[in-house]
Image 1 (cartoon, rainbow, N blue to C red):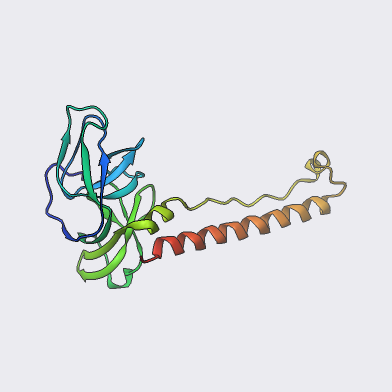
Image 2 (image 1 turned 90 degrees about the vertical axis):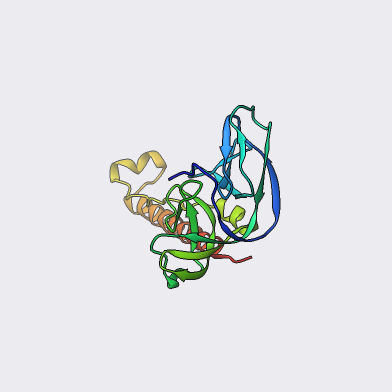
Amino acid sequence: MAKSADGQGIFEIGPINTLPVVASGTIYRDSAVGLSSGYARALVAGDSFRGFADAKVDNSDGSAGDKNVDVLSSGYKQVTLSSVAITDVGKPVYMSDDETYTLTQGSNSLVGSVYRYVDTDTCVIEFGGDKTLQASAVSTVAVTAVTTVAATDSTPFGFTTQAQADAIVESLNAVITKQASIVTTINAMLGGLKG
């Protein structure tokens, strides 16, 4: 559920950045901040994560950029993360809104990784920094294999036999499978990197 009041996050302080706030927007202290068309707002799933608000900023009556928000752009933060386990250390952490953490990627925003397990549903995350920005740039690619070309379809592609068509399709499938493997490996590496 999105924030409706200032929070009291427990942070280990990192670098601070200043960002212009969206028109008619309010960002509460401790809210995750994302970008929408270059302006900061309380994070919405899919936003590019930029940090956590250092103080409440009320731009509800203002135009885009009338007010700025200071954000802690990287560091460590103790959070409530449902079902987090000691075996989740190093796994990517995502947010579905400005205060809801999850280990599920889906359409959520990558914010960092599990740094330390604390207790049931509680951990310290390492958030922000270059690794989050880099990992956000790579997403999982859905790959569908090419199906076998039917004999009646081979002539328009310049194949004289079904065997030629099938050989090309087999080669294409091998390339697609390799690309999917590479994307999966890159996502795992970027999502799990530590500063």
